[in-house]
Length: 114
Length: 114
Image (cartoon, rainbow over all chains, first blue to last red):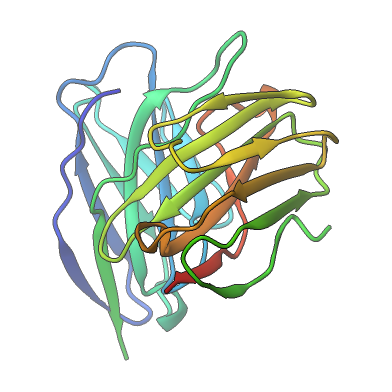
């Protein structure tokens, strides 16, 4: 799986959009970009994933650059409950069989300020 | 749907004691996983299962055994607990057709081995 680089921490004001960057310059053509978050002491929570097109769901938007070497997770209206560690993970998404674990790096600690 | 549940939430063991952690999911997912998370670190995969009656080793399997007798349950056993197994244990599950990277996590079991 490709390696990812994220800033260790970021601040964002409540109500503003939080933009979390991730670099994955060695991503392969069949690798997806996944985002998870972990709120203190809780299990990781799946947010969104994408291959090359931008994606949006009820939680967030994912913007992937055309060369796929970086991406940005956008939380459109951040709330205090969005304070968490956010993980960007790059890996092969679908498979014909078998499964293995996710590799969580250190992630970005996003702090939403009131 | 309860999603992924874990029992117990917290446990204290003495060195050499045994215990079983239970993970249950009600989403009819084929894949299930056990991870451990040590303070300040990412999650590491212990064992996983791609279906009822099948298990496989992950990154850190030593000292643990698993069983998946029913599709909805995945058990993690510690035969002789050691202080190095003090950690937070997370169970996860995923749906085959949803892709290997989309995993849903339980709330965790905090284990302290004295």
